[in-house]
Amino acid sequence: MSSTVTKAVIPVAGLGTRVLPASKAIPKEMMPVVDKPVIQHVIEEAVAAGITDIVLVTRAGKSAIEDHFDSHYELEAELERKGKTAILESVRTIVPSNVTITAVRQNKALGLGHAVLCAAPIIGNCDFAVLLPDMLVNSYGQEEADLSAMVSAYKTSQQGQIMVEPVPMEHVDRYGVVNCNGVDVRPGQSADIAQMVEKPPIDKAPSNLTINGRYILPARIMELLKDTQPGAGGEIQLTDAMAEYLTEGSLQAFHMQGKTYDCGNKVGYLQANVIYGLQNQETAESFKTFIKNLDL
Ligand code: G1P
Image (tube, rainbow, N blue to C red; front, side, top):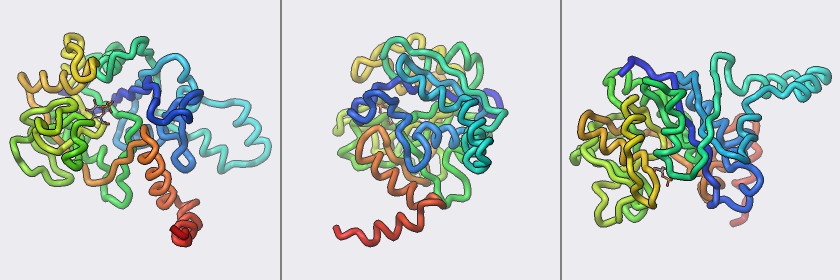
């Protein structure tokens, strides 16, 4: 493993069926949480953790995502002409100039593992991060954001890190689930993973610690993905490649400190808008007043 991680894969080829009809003509990743599309929140999280090369794994009909991170000459010229410097700045600096965003296509919906494998030619022989764009990781008020803390854990341990959080036992069958040999991993800490399984039946789940969509993985995972057979749901699962890796190396579970909001479903998306709205400098005050005065 190399000493740090600068490349990240963000799979954005999903159909967004859980948020239809909103996502019929716009990618679900472009739905706004307060004043930015979900994908921008995710990319800002990656950049803040030191990621400089981002690979979007996309498909036909989702070019709005690439456009969002590209320059928009006409808009910029118009804002400049009108002297709207603050807005101009927010449009121009969506990502810092040292960050590159490239896109590859996933031309068959064969699962998350397959989507990640589509980025292999760009990732090469490097350890890499994966961020699932449905999930917003909110580290508000923490000394260090969870992804940054996970990168630090990776740098120190030189072991792959998988972000996890506990969920009620009755929900474990929706996620990848890890077991750390019964070790009680505290928030902000990492522990070796003994076992992991994708979407286990509730009575077979090895714990209630679930994978929540942030990974730092050894380069070797890309090779293992080439041979990974369809698993849960008939899809090529990233969890299965990681489980295979455990037979030859080790991975750690990083227990997050913050909160996640799954914007791939309606309630999670609404919750994200409430929480981010209350944390946003521009909207917090009046939004809080509005919520306080709700006659529920
Ligand atoms: C994917 C992963 C799963 C993880 C989940 C987090 O599942 O395969 O391990 O727990 O994301 O959201 P999906 O939600 O794509 O079915």
